[in-house]
Length: 267
Image: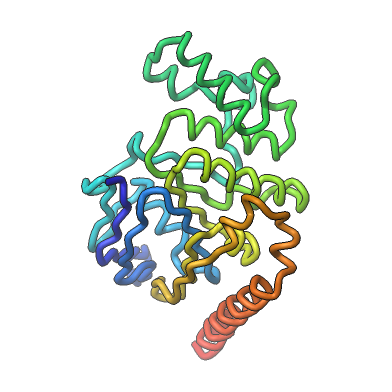
């Protein structure tokens, strides 16, 4: 099984001034193979720290993450990362960016070319393989980043605000494309976002995190991701069920922010 399991994960950062920050406290959950999880919360709740530990960029100070029943102790090919900015080589062509990982593994060029063509079609960039990456829009570059991640066939896809830098219309179109890729590939996806609407639309499961120390505050299991595969996202966002859940979560996060501000002012 390719389940991701968090077992009582803690992360404490020691400050040069002598203090410490408890970024994550007692985080435990299981993300089953093929699930799509969105995570949101107020600033300082540990979202990015959580993602960085799963990616293997940092080690937790307590507990562990396992994937395929193996402890995550560093970066690995079983996980793919899509950043807010595509982190692309803009001087390379679209094809050269997408097949970069396979070329580094000395994969068969003919097979690689076939895979690149398939993934460019999936992300809607067929015909752009020879185009220099710097000539493309931000939305198209994020599609390249998705294809570059997916072509390496990771078990788990990690997304850190992948649509945050896009304009509203492009962001909505990309949300739909992420849902289609999720359903067509059966990949397990974890997406970090600051947008409540985006978290609701994309998250088959949704975690709201609370800050200081960062911890899981509430989990939702939602129907909107499945509905987004067959319905207009705008109709979903205008539905009473979506609006009610959105307001509930917004109020929850607002109250957390108010509490943080109160503690800061008191200090």
